[in-house]
Image (cartoon, rainbow, N blue to C red; front, side):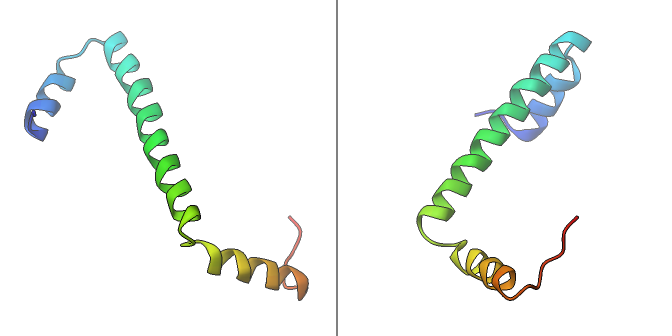
Amino acid sequence: METITEIESAVSKLSENELAEFRDWFANYDAAIWDKQFEQDVKVGKLDALANKAVADFKAGRVREL
């Protein structure tokens, strides 16, 4: 496994095109990890309280239209 310093060094040596490709790859990679964590959080109920509060606020008329 490379260290962060080695990764930073390698990235700093990329050409403009390679950096653009890496940026796109990393954005997709990071989004996939975030999506997986979000799905796991939903599955185990970590967001239930927030969802329930949002529904309760909506039903009580405590929302505003944009």
